[in-house]
Image (tube, rainbow, N blue to C red; front, side, top):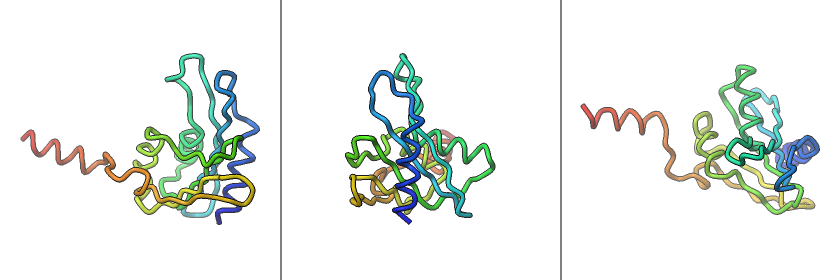
Length: 137
């Protein structure tokens, strides 16, 4: 599982648009039915409008009707063990369980593996919003 997804994430690096940071990131997100969607980072001169590889892969999957995911791999051209940022972790948490495996490319055959829950232990989810609403009543 990790090898195939890491390779797909590495392949996605080629499409990255990174004229400012020159830091290419690729992601491969596997759905519950085994379909793999890839994404790459797309930068913008206004950095806050840049798209992250994980978001691009997730958005593609969601637009195709997928809502259940079972693994994610992330790679950078630097092969430095890049993990999803906090914003991407929270976005993933909207659709993925805490036990979603996240495989991070360390280069060569080395990977680091985490779960989404390990990377984002205190997720804001629908239950958080419901609890806040109840406390206002």
